[in-house]
Image (cartoon, rainbow, N blue to C red; front, side, top):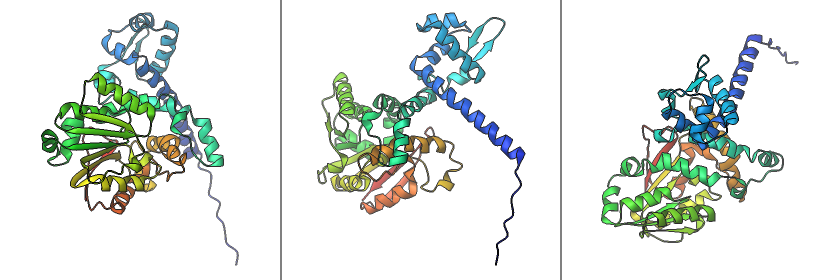
Length: 360
């Protein structure tokens, strides 16, 4: 018996629409780089403060080279980010645009997030090698990663940790005020933990991260703030080995990066007091790709995962969960670690993250 194959007619209109979509993507990818530059050079911050100005006036106000400023403004104007008056030669950043592009707009400053694009792009050739040969790219290969991650964490976690995130766990604020032992797993540059240590002087705080650079940043900030109730240590989160010591353990955007996430979660369960709370922030997504079609940051999530989160785990012969491991997988691994009670909560201002309130 022969199978009849019907050849589908080529849809020219669909092809043209898709080509237009890809040209739009190309332009937006270019704007992403220019937005990162605008953030790092504080061009957005100064433009928000200036009246409509020429490129020379903007260059003077920012202390930057006019020729580069003018070319950057060209991208911003044609990208519909900055407005331009051809008669006067004046450029202007509307207040409505500044509301998500300036440092004063934090935690809504999206411009800072665009720094991840050049950071990830810097390892593109190494990632392509991994596509061909397997393996992963280690943390050490990423320029500015800890700096950019610390800034992003300061926005998403630091700005909300005391007022919004901790209160998600009923009663924990009162416990912190009275004095408890707290551990932050994968603490990075330690900003969230330092903020907690400053807000709750009666409690004692410990931060573990396996990055020497990140721990040095954390210690420097703690010293600058004059904190005596916080300590940081270079340590693999899978090797906590401190049975029933902590009343509160936190992990902010850290578990999916781990080489051995199951072992880390088991170590957290063992280090937690019987009535303790594990507060885990991680990326809001489904473990199933088709359920992420309506997730407005899904392409960004998968890209960051492929070019960082997944590969740094694989570089250590790890599981390579990736940023889009998803809520279903997270719940599965938490249950496997012995956590029986899990509430998944979200914050109105945070479109990126879930907050898992976990008890035994």
